[in-house]
Length: 148
Image (tube, rainbow, N blue to C red; front, side, top):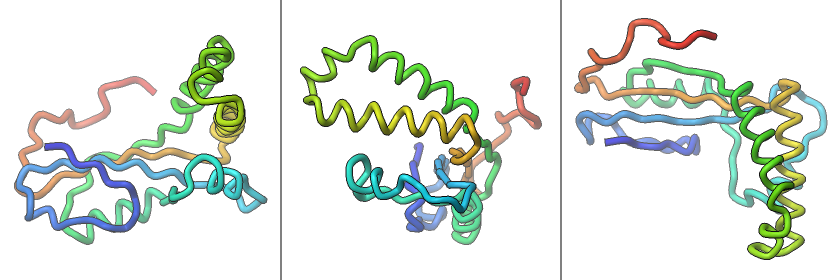
């Protein structure tokens, strides 16, 4: 049974669900300069919260999960956003027809700005894999199975 954590700081005890794997993604800013959070909070994710990977890992361990893997997906997400931006440009008329011009402009600006932030290292996206103590993890490789 897969469980997603939003990084909100809320978690349940792993003992309540034997065999639960938790996969969590946290996004953090790595700079102290002015940010676009006001724009994002108002127009894109009104209830969004950026939670760092350190907090997510600490909270998962504090309630009994075993963290098996953590990975920064920043370079991958920059490429994903590059492709999403290109797709939006290619299908601009369809997007405007579907959600309206104001919303299409907001999402285009958000994705373009986020792409730059990911490319330049100003924001990160971490994925954390954690399991309950009762879960067998014999099927996971002992080292990453991909090439960096």
